[in-house]
Image (tube, rainbow, N blue to C red):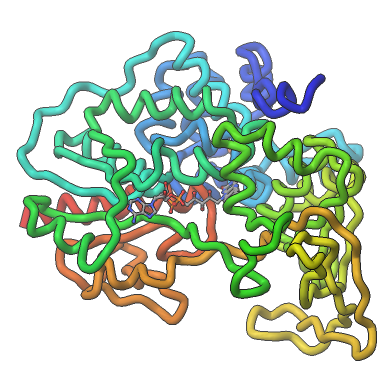
Length: 450
Ligand SMILES: Cc1cc2nc3c(=O)[nH]c(=O)nc-3n(C[C@H](O)[C@H](O)[C@H](O)COP(=O)(O)OP(=O)(O)OC[C@H]3O[C@@H](n4cnc5c(N)ncnc54)[C@H](O)[C@@H]3O)c2cc1C
Ligand code: SF4
């Protein structure tokens, strides 16, 4: 299979028979611990019970009512540490032969039900009575989409302003297509558009007071959900070095019709990815799929301290990625023409715990060495743009320029302005952004009804 075909589509999910067979394993727990494990209150206990009793329409309605991005969450949620971690079926294994039991595959059932609703053309929501109040949503990632859908379902006039040419946030311009393809996103977006949400793409709300000005321009409330799109870098001006990319630029290129260009740069080359989180895992796996000769992962702490999910780390190892643990990049080596040649690394050892509670990596004196590399991708974190506080000067931000908002309502320090998603939490999960959008939508309704 060519690399392009590798990237085009994500793997198939459950079919009806498989989903029902999996639901039949459910213990129908009265207290449904799985439901308590979902940050967006998608309520797996309820939709699995409905599926089990063949009420498929009801199961779909439960998901979509609670989580407008139920399909995306079914595919992308790290369920082993959320709903599936709480599932009672997994505890049965104590009394059974090893491997005989495991949690219900909740994410896969959820994905199936949403795909089934598209195949069947199910209509989940009734048309609401229109209300005159206008609300502006800044950013069309999971937080913005969830807030917009929740308000539109109640008849509010919602306009989503999106800086990029197409909506979806990280779902559109971040997550690699073999994990979440454009077709799937398009279907999920259609469900939101059918609610009457108005999207204005290529419309960045930036510049002095631009977000606050929306209130003066007739919007009753504003929900800020611009996410984190500025890349943290090892050196202040990395874009000058040919062969050096931030994960933001690299992953957006893969999603933006520039797959062939990236393949040309990576095929047969040595690629090093810096970072230990899930974004770094997307970068290394995609580099392998693009045909890199060797892919190195550089991480300054130990394997156990890596923030990436355990299954992602195992998959990377199985794909043949070389893990350079306890190595910290300090500089780049380039030719006279500023073409990347390698990364200068220093070996580290673990010292006392730092603020994060993890043992701090300490450089070992005299242990510097150079890893030769043709391409380096920095996946060392995303942050808010430096100037973003100017867009909303009355909204309190912290030292990292993250917006300070009340977790129970999304309220910021400026009346009528609410916020949620990564711009409040820092790098988080799709399902958490969905919940922030819902919480803020409820608070916006209360604010407008005052
Ligand atoms: C590469 C990658 C892979 C990930 N994989 C997963 C995963 O598998 N599972 C998971 O649960 N989470 C994953 N995450 C995390 C998850 O995607 C984020 O937590 C989530 O998308 C945050 O949603 P958001 O709505 O806050 O922001 P975003 O998704 O970042 O969306 C913000 C939107 O606002 C727009 N915007 C920015 N500034 C402006 C402006 N001034 N005016 C108008 N629009 C603006 C942006 O263009 C963007 O479309 C991943 C993150 C990354 C980066
Ligand atoms: S916890 Fe597991 S077994 Fe119990 S209701 Fe939820 S999915 Fe079913």
